Image (cartoon, rainbow, N blue to C red; front, side, top):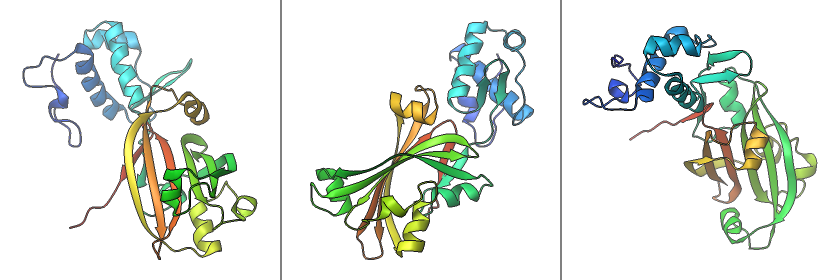
Length: 252
């Protein structure tokens, strides 16, 4: 099977080493990427039988290649309709901007719905992150994140209950928390530490987000501080790896 030509932004030689010894499904996957590029967003993939014959592989091998591309967010399966070229991934800046700002900058309408709004006692780690004493009350706001009505993430935010005593009763969880903190409370967000890693969703998380538990997730941990260096929030955000990516600016 011939190696696809190199495309900028993709793995060199389609990820196939010079000796050419790779699983056949991976070579099929590389050729499918070229086909996806030709077809364009929303296009229907030709039938499994047709493509397996074109690539001269078994249908089992072909299915494995397609399954990986579905997990990576390059293809999407629709029950009873077929397999389609997926839309580009959403991009969120790794910066002190809200989810709302990040989505609207791409022409996408963000929304959220509340799963949990509660008071919890801060354990040692949460207390250290929020600058409060262990056992002090903290607020926990858990929300499903949507983009154009599609569920793409799950966010848990923790704040000091003593600093924001009325937040759960006055804040609309369908709106931007950053807009509330800066526009209503008058907080100046100045600094954040953020860590990104890959995980698999728990069964509960997968159910809330509406995703396959096998789909890799992008997990962000953030502690945000105000202009006086006082912690404002600790956030745990889980995003679908097949629909989301992150971008940041690096300067010397």
